[in-house]
Amino acid sequence: MQIKIPGMKKTLSDYQDRTGRIMLLLIFEGMIMNASFVLTQGVFLSGYIIKIGGNDFLVGMLNSSLNWSLLVSIPAFLIYKRIKNRRFLLVTLLLFSRILICGIVFLPLITMSHGAMLLPSSIMVVLGNTFWSAYMVGYMVMIVDLVPSEKRNGFMFTRMLTLRIAFSVAAVAMGYLLDYFTKSMTGFYIIYGFSFALAIADVIIIWISSKSLPKQEPNSRNQKENILEPLKHRNYTVYLAFIFVLYFAFSISNSYTPVYLLKHVGLGYGLISTMNIFMYTSLIIFTSVWKKVEKKIGMLNVFMICALIMAFEFIFYVFISKQTYLLLIPSSIISGAGNAGFNVVAINYRYSIIPAEKRTLYESWNVALVGGAFLLGPFVGNELLHLIPQVNGHLFTSNFQILYLVSFIIAIILICLTFKGPSRIRLIQAEPVSGSAIINNSAIINNSMEKRDQDG
Image (cartoon, rainbow, N blue to C red; front, side):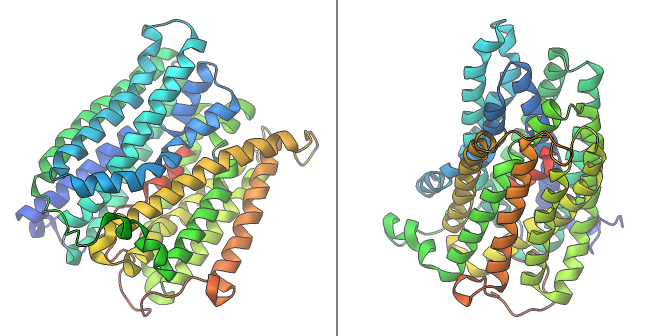
């Protein structure tokens, strides 16, 4: 059989050995996982919390909880280093995470009081996302362990393409379904139930594919020294600082994007999902585009350009209101274009500068600081919402628009300093610019930003 796989130069017949079958299984798993995942995050989670009476701050915090729960990454690293059966731990964390997240929608069957559901729902969301973040620490390394380095380039691009198609179809279809049921609990029952069914299938696939996981990497030094080692790595420390401040700037405002669009602008789930088609299409198209551009201008230049593109998305949100909601179209296209390259290059850059035998530890520090940024951002955003005098003019109709402007300004200053500023605070090219693939030696797409893609 000579069937071409998008993004890969080989055909299905080239992947009929055991490794090839595992790769194809992981591609299919990525589609199921992301379709399940998108239905319990972003506008779907925010809409449910709004329905049961959550205020703007609670909705914003829970919307970003998946990201700030990444703070468990370093403790999770210690657990992974001490446990022999990674396979069992991975499946357990995945299963409990999805049970907790999908289970919130069934609380009304226990109590009819919406106010009574807010606390247990919040706890279940936070715990579920915490288990998910701990799971992702081991999951990212599992991908690297199971896929040979010489095949990882094509595999990762194919996987990104297919998973983005999967969560695009799922989000759009379920968005219109929720509007069809007039945003009632029936619609949420169907969506969260379907998400849990996909999650069970995901658990089964992970159990099968993780059977081939190799033995744990050796731990020759004492644990205290290992934990602090990444902070002594100059290039990696600069990278961590850049990522932390950038995500902090973004999360000041985008933590509140679903509640702003649903509650204050008054858009429906179907309309938001339709607008997101532009972002998903842009993600798919530019995933391959950035691969080619990187070969010509180098990794760091693509890194900088994509960061700038992501920042300019916030300019459009500055002017989005009930009258100008169509600005979501160019905003979504820009978001997809920027994230398509940024997520991949960020992984490529850090995996090109960290020791291969320490990738779990270094990755733990990365996602933990991302989590810290997304925890701090909503608090700062909430304070600014109350400190800024209430606006109601022709240009600005909501204080949320001011938040997007603040995010844009901080991000632009940071990007200029990190890529063009003094050498001591600038990212340094880790490898000679060559025709190397954009995700050589990479793990999986950074899940915190994949969630940003899915939030709309």
